[in-house]
Length: 172
Image 1 (cartoon, rainbow, N blue to C red):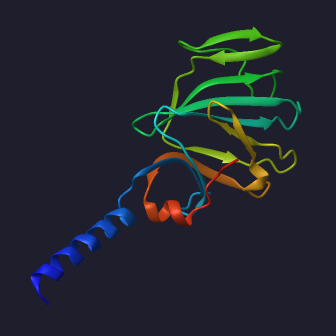
Image 2: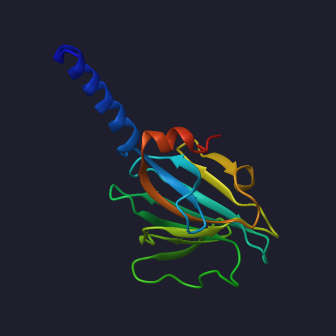
């Protein structure tokens, strides 16, 4: 085979390999338990924000946790909003965080808590978890993507084009 045909073929092959195996798309990824099996992902960019809203299993009131993703792919918890104190709920703010009551709800803002990953369980008894993102606050119910009672390791990372194409993309 002549070099004039081999070189373009090698360049095309190299481009295809790069597109398939080099991470390029940033997303919040939901891994099945402690495995590397992606259950679903939410495409976001660095500095984009998202919320996880869940119904507290005892108080039966919504709890809103607000996060954003850093350029280093950390998940930063910015704020938590809730209606009642009790099991699993904070009772005060620590460090630079600010505690206030606003619009009949308790708010702890300026949390600045960094996570490389988080473990999240989709509610089983009270299964009303929601994921909200974007300036227009798009929302999905966890149950549309995950079994009630299932748990996930959630982290921000870059996906390869192959992972992106074969995974379950969360969208409105």
